[in-house]
Image (cartoon, rainbow, N blue to C red):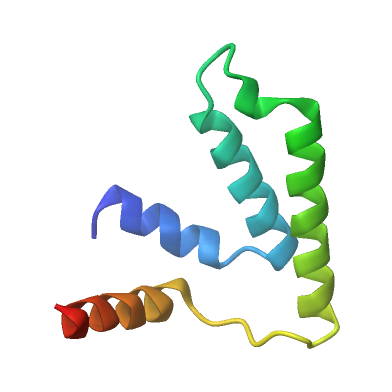
Length: 82
């Protein structure tokens, strides 16, 4: 198992809220210093979107699926389209 796979498996053991926070932190880490993408407005909007998605999951309005399953479906669809 690679280090990335190990980290992913550990992350999947986190709660919804902790995974959302981890994603937010990772996305923020991608912004180069001084890049306007990381503005307060953008961060507020993204945080609101994450909170809404978490609330929808808590209310049972969405059916969470493992990311690996989603990737496999996308990959299969792309292969069939070729």
